[in-house]
Image 1: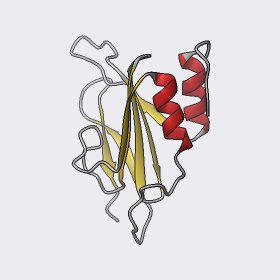
Image 2 (image 1 turned 90 degrees about the vertical axis):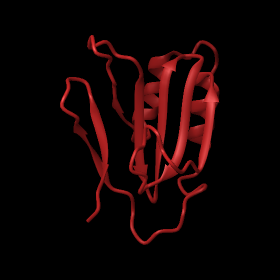
Image 3 (image 1 turned 45 degrees about the vertical axis):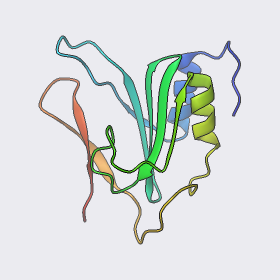
Length: 126
């Protein structure tokens, strides 16, 4: 995937949504959005893309059983930098690149964490 400088944030987010990413929007104490986080759990891994600004994006792939996906203990693949480059690198990964072998697929869900705009990823254990 290659984008030009004319590609908008909306174009990139649309592509991520088409690829199965779900988004959360963590907020500060005043309720303002502080970042946009996309999550895609597939196979035995979880892919995360965090967009703080067009030139400040972080993408990671981690094992599907990672307990804290926003601050993972194990990272299988990671890139940071400008949105166009980082998201293109992420989308070029094959679903099984860097994936650990496991008997079952990753499953989980986002649950509210008690405050408006806050959520936490819970890995399914059964």
